[in-house]
Length: 533
Image 1 (cartoon, rainbow, N blue to C red):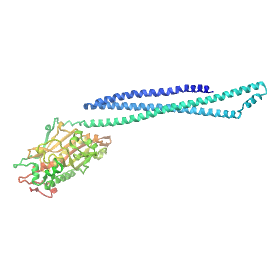
Image 2 (image 1 turned 90 degrees about the horizontal axis):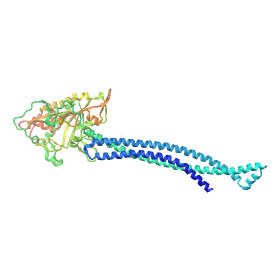
Image 3 (image 1 turned 30 degrees about the vertical axis):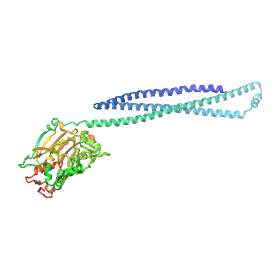
């Protein structure tokens, strides 16, 4: 009996070999495909590592990384296909296993019935009585044959049950193997997805960084030149006058009114800071207030914006080089002190979709401004000319692209008109290509006359940035033709205390007093002049 059982077991194992071989072949084929893709990924990783060594190869690195992402996507797709194939294999195995278990159940039921019958007719005597109680020889033979065949049937039933049990065991083992392969694949897929997400994030950062370094396309009307020495004078407004008496250095003028304390500021905050006092401080505030009302009267909406902005706004409104040269970062926080209120004013529209009928957006804003102002400067740029902190009245416009040229002319004209009401001669300069910041399409500087230096110096800058800031900040307009990027413009109204230099020099009297133009007198308590202390 044991020998027979062993033979049956070997037969069952032989029958199960093709089942294992089939699944193993599938898994080996899938692993081979994935191995080829992994090799491609490894090769591209090696190339990427090499390209990272050369800063000048960032674009090549970007291309390699893009290709690697595509390879990883194909690899994940291959894994997904493998998982689907294995899932189909598992479904087939489950169906086969279900059929085997059902067959086994039927055979067990039949075998159980035969065993119960044998139990009822278990004695040899009963079998013999069954045989010998035959009425004739033919019946005896038939009964003997029946008993023998029934015994064989029972044995075969037992063997079939054993065989089915072994098949089920093998099928379950095969299923477990395929399940394990599927689980490994799923883990591998999740790992590859994490790598892909990291690579895509890295790629997006690279794309953004490269995009941020690409300058804007300048307007064809901009003169070509290497630096500000090639800027072109457009027009003068007011007659520049050099008085018969000597004009002192601007810091001395302020000190004559007890209006400036640089030494105390240096003790408190370091170089580049100041205390304004008395009439000079009042004059400073008066100019800001007058500039505010001047712009409101011209239809601009007054605004006091945040004085700190997040990094995504900073990189949206300026280039990396400008950011590094200008901005102060708040340690431990994603915040920067603004260098001009233009930054937070344009940032106000980040990720906004503006209905076309709501344009233009015309805003004028007050804010303190904070700038690093790197580098050494001559005596005329000391005092309160080039400082780390100052206050400013700004104007910005968000408009349709076809209106940006018109608004550009209006903005710089506003500054010219304001300075002329304060009896300060000014001129406008067209900035050449070499003097344009990366994002500017066109720019005009407004310069005030300095009787002391007998030349003009910058007091404001009007810039058309096209859609550069809008693209970075996703400032869109929706109209009948769909969505498009807005144009943004900005211009300085006044920026004291630098502006005060031009004001004091041009309104200084021979006795040292400073006359107050009529437009500013209401903001100075009706004073017509301020007297030396």
